[in-house]
Length: 455
Image 1: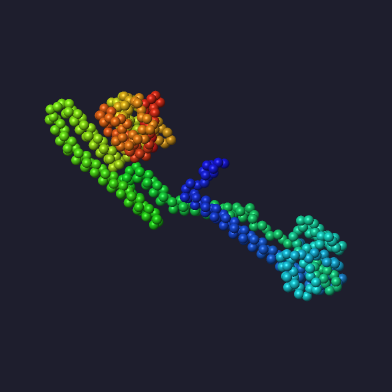
Image 2: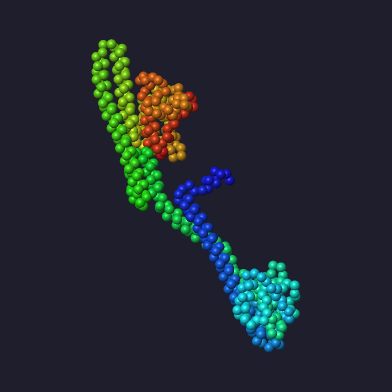
């Protein structure tokens, strides 16, 4: 598995990361707590088992010792039960042991049998055969306890007053391990339930972030979009208030710029009108025509500048637009062919979008003489390609031509130069619709303009 593949397996949202971290913390904490509990539980069960074994051994010793010597073997045999045997032997059959269990058992027996003459605690010796009078059940248990991998047991031998050894053997029950499948299933189920609850809660907690994200996208399209509701937790209210204040400042900036440019345009048109009147009175026809042409260029540049500035402040409401009909309308009267599917409808600002394609078709007609328009649908978007047969644009210039007033040729003539605002206005409007516009080489030569608009 590659590093990129491993990264993709990780969550990429705040909710996902928090749930994964919470589930990991819960799982580790549950396992740690269960581990400590299991350890203490096993120790407590072992201690309880040793106390019970000491009680049974002490009771057996007292009972057998109180019986007549000739009846002691029968009494010892009768006191045996499941996991517990008592036997008399002339010699000790217990190998003294060491360790915490032996010390605990020896202490418990000495508490219960303070008058014991001699006491030995450990395990059955594996080098001695079982006593001849040992019952069959005890013999089998003796074999299992002295064989390799013997059952866990504790044996205690005490010498009686007549010299015989009374030995009690108790099989120690192994506590049931806590790490059973059902416990692991329970831990997993609890972790999943807590994770699901945390996921639900976090989804609600991060909902304001998704609202903020959507508002930021809308703001990138229209600065006059509805402000965010300033509700929810304090941090969310503060973020919404800051976002709304930013939106108000952007709106004021766009409106102030538009008013400033409108005022400049108005102020410039007055002296241009006076210059035009004076030019009309000039006697030299050649100079008069040149001056009138320059004044016309100035008026066109002022009008284009004002139109460019107004794009940011455009308040035209979105509407359902038939893209094929809009393109055919923009191409009417031009040497342009349009190939578009019917019923391709998108939400857009009709006037602004029509201006985009009018500008593109103007350029195609001006530099290529004609154009062909093709509309396709691709992954939830409408893709419009405009091809011409002109000289095209060098790759190094394709991004620069979107800058306001930038023109490849140095001429400012009305025939070829233009104002350098057509593509700038087009990209501004396309971006306001959440789309993209790119330039490339047309397959048969010339320039291809590709406009992608979300449906």
